[in-house]
Each structure stands twice: as structure tokens, then as C-alpha cells.
Image 1 (cartoon, rainbow, N blue to C red):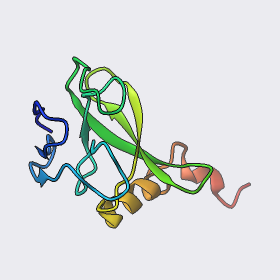
Image 2: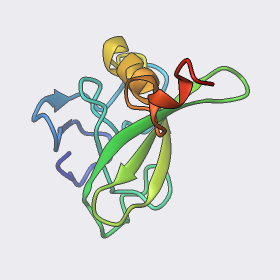
Image 3: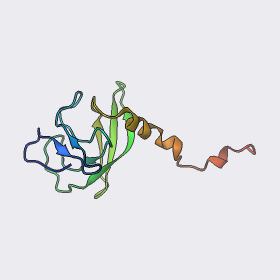
Image 4: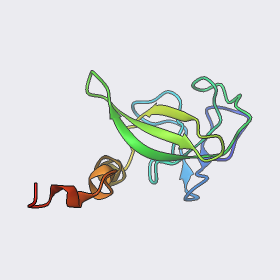
Length: 118
């Protein structure tokens, strides 16, 4: 995302280059691309645009909150900071599901431990 002086303006995604509208159903501080789900490390607090890092933030997982709401967990590629951001109403469902399924496609443990020998 390219930083603009007005927090309510749209932006160009830092990862896929698409133009992103500032407003989306379900969020008051647009902070990620609805197509690829990448973000940029701009905020110390939601919407303040005061973080000096400015590095891309990779979507790494989905959090399901106690009320059932989904949020994207982003990791900064510059400083490794983790941020959790609510999904927006126009986020691509396929991109969200790919994040949900990532641990099943690439488990953190060897699958051969489930062999017939056990």
C-alpha cells in the first residue's frame, strides 16, 4: 500500500499492485488488500499511520474470535511484528480459505508419523 496523507483515501497494494478502495463493509480502517490480503506496516494503533517501518505485511493465518468473527494475522516482513486485522466484507473468500487451509497443506510436523506402524 502506498501511504497517502489522508487516511480515508484508497491505496495501491504493495504486493499485487491493485487499486484498493478505502471503504469496505465491516471495517473502519482499511488495512489490507481484498485480493491478496497483504498489508503494509503503517500503524502503531489502528488508523494512526505513525509506524516508521512501512514494510509489507504477509497474511500468515486466520484467527476466529470468540464471537465467530474472522481476523487475518499479518507478520511484518521488515520487523516481524504481528498484527491482527478484521476481515472486510469484500475480501476474496478463496484467499481467506487458502489461509485457513495452509496448516493442512503444509503441516508443522512430518505426516509419516501417522503411518501404519503406530
